[in-house]
Length: 157
Image (cartoon, rainbow, N blue to C red):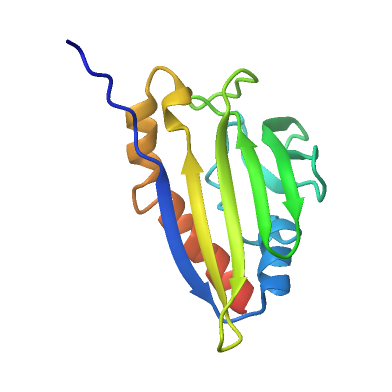
């Protein structure tokens, strides 16, 4: 009997020394401040990264030549506590409207006035061919851990 092994979700947890309101705002409205310009699926250099502030909004990049590259959309917009994004970039690092993994970010106030941020990128088996390699890359130091460290720095500055 063959068993199919599914890639595990990527989960990260961090504490930022700001309120949930500010953490949510920096994660969303301030997305371009902390998203690495090296992380794009466009053929050119990334100029701006955008999350539109509403359920159904787009999540995308604009290259220096003005071309837009879709990454997914906002599935749930619940400030300041929760953001749910559809990630529609497949295992070959191209936009695929049929690919649907999810990124959920929860922002919870702590007793000492900080915010606990819980991040999960799930359903990675839906990335298709190259799913495990993509998961390894996303869970590497240059992946979600490093990206979220940039978010923490932007939120606390």
